[in-house]
Amino acid sequence: MSENKFVVVDGSSMLSTCYYAVLPREIMFAKTEEEKLKHYDKILHAKDGTYTNAIFGMLKMVVSLMKKQQPDHMAFVFDKTRDTFRRELYSQYKGTRGSTPEPLKDQFVLMERILEEAGFLVLYSDQYEADDYAGSLVMKFREQIPMVVLTKDHDYLQLVSDDYNVRAWMVQSRQEKADELYKKYYAFYGMGKDEINLPEKVFEYTSDTVLQEEGVRPEQIPDLKGIQGDASDNIPGVKGVSSAAPILLREYGTVERIYEAIHEAESDKKRLKDLQDFWKNDLGISRSPYKAMTKTSEEELCGEKAAVLSKILATMKTDIAIDFKLEDFSLSSYKEDKIREWLISLDIKEASIFGAGK
Image (cartoon, rainbow, N blue to C red; front, top):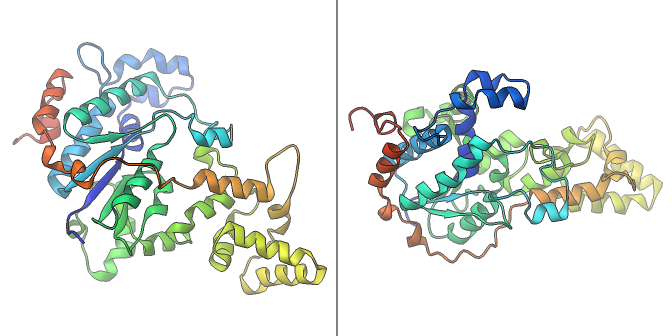
């Protein structure tokens, strides 16, 4: 096993985070789209009007990552559209999200171009999402090199594996939250934050910390979302079962096995009562989730159908054909000068990214 590391960056998550992190207050607190439009001219932009606030933040992150964490291999994965195979399965997938603001939409295309010209491989398509490419990269290369996924999206936790040395660098909303997690998990080992050497606002998830924080093992994250749902992606889950989900999954392992236990018990009233008593007395579930788990309706997606479909929607694909070899992602092709050229052309001061002393 190589001692190097391969960092896969969730470009869509990072660019969006950078965009909203430095928006003018007038836009952040505007109550209508019309109000926001009036203040678009206050968003950081080049002399020719090209919006640059998200690009500025992401390039700063990339340069810092290269300098401080010094990965040996790197890839960027992006979402190109919301109309992927998941929307074919469930038309309302991500249906509660508003449209991407034009100033951000413009920066996606330019960011991808800058990264490619700087020597990085950038993966995206009309059929799959960024996390599907991340999952496929991890599955293809995890036996060859330790891997890290850098993201704000908790879906990526399903890729974490101590057996294969796959970690998740999860971006927290505030540095205080990251520090809180550091103290909770690393103070025991007498390790300081500087020794761990991670990007700002980032906490590293291992299999153990996923279990401690989420209540399930990494590979059970899709099952957890199958029951609890995911409001950010409009994955329905099973209404009314949220708190019982981790407990049931620790006992049965998967959504499918939970339903196997339910169906086996339903053939006999006594067995069904025994099952619910077991949930209450042995597992500590105070309110039986049976009715919610078995609800059926022609008008709405619910019960077992909702759980199974939600799990499928939350499961990353790990079998996309990746035609590149490990060496194709090597950072020996990284062109720092190309980033400097882009900064100049976009009227962004180099010192603000590379440091005044550079």
